[in-house]
Amino acid sequence: MVDPQPRTFAQAPAGAVPTSGPPIYPRLLPPPPLSARIPLPGGGALTKLPGKGDLLALTVDDGVNTEVVRAYTQFAKDAGVRLTFFVNGTYDSWTDNQALLRPLVDSGQIELGNHTWSHPDLTTLTKSQIAQQLTRNDEFLKNTYGVGAKPYWRPPYAKHNADVDAVAADLGYTVPVLWSGSLSDSTLITEDYIVKMADQFFTPQAIVIGHLNHLPVTHVYPQLVEVIRSRNLRTVTLNDVFLKTP
Image (cartoon, rainbow, N blue to C red; front, side, top):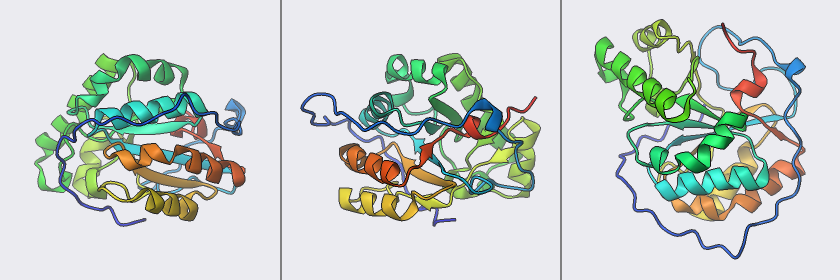
């Protein structure tokens, strides 16, 4: 797993993403058929998609910046990319962008996962506080988007232990989702570096983490699509890959 990149969150100011009309993206491969879905593997955190294949799970976290959440959602709508957003409900971006995002959630193109309410290090909290972080966010997702995130959750900073996992599992969050590669954009970095990370980590069966926090990534969507297309990868949500648990 790539370094979890600890950082301090501050509500970033929204900025304008310059555009000259909607971009035209090449057609991407569709997700696998329903018949291809497999049971969830047991035995701890999920860091890669199992087996051999052509799948790429692009997972995007937090939501500090309203404009970045809007731009990522519009990117999915325009390009057909399938994404999993790991949401911190404390950020206004998730209510600000509800009208744009909810249709993609309803269709299954964007899946929502639980990243806790306010992004604390769960290993420093009591069991009651851990449960509150997950349940408050769970209720927010259901009330705002009409969906639950179970069984998928992502521990902030990738920090979890047996006690944290036990509390999460008792709440129905049995699958901590980590990653095998990162766009390294939890902090402000250059557009070129994001593309470099995509070139390194957009590989078959990878789970890649990005962030909904800073504007540079919103300027390189065409380059990300080109890496995906040139490698004949299929972008997938976690629900595209695994059978739903009872």
